Image 1 (cartoon, rainbow, N blue to C red):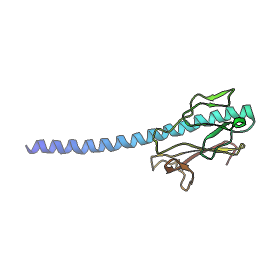
Image 2: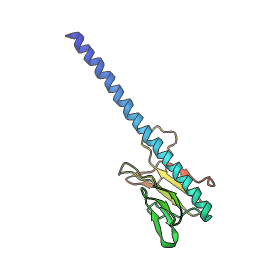
Image 3: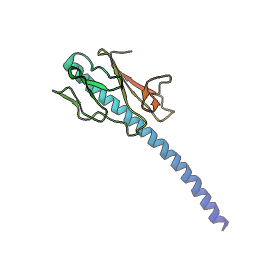
Image 4: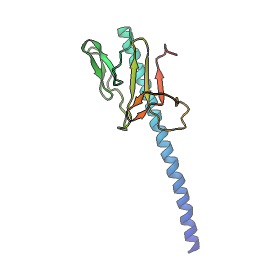
Amino acid sequence: MVELLVVIAIISVLSTLGVANFRSSRLKARDVERKSNLVAVAKSLEAYVNDHSSYPLSSLEGLILCQPATNTTCSWGSAFTDGLSNYMTTLPAEENPDHSYFYTSNGVTYTLYAYLENPNDPAIIPGLTVSCGQTTCNYQLKSSNQL
């Protein structure tokens, strides 16, 4: 009977450690996906600047103003198109409804923002004040011509 209790205790400890590691791995995987999504958006913005000689402006809500003539924004989760060219079939959208991506641009430079869940991620930038939905953004990706 004592041996059975010892075995149950060992299994409990091992399963607790396994669940904690699994949760940490999921956080890291979602953050990697967020970073990858922003890199893909950045590449589509570079394609846009090649056609229009400037980056698309941003709306106050952090959306891409993809058709300035008609004041049309491209929402996260929809196509990034200027009406003639399709720069990205679907802009990435956050899975978590409390978080969102945020875009700012003055036409010369741009910055993309996201919220990373893993507090130990070395890419986190403390002190950002941009809102990523219900939380404050803690990661940014800037255009290559911006310091």
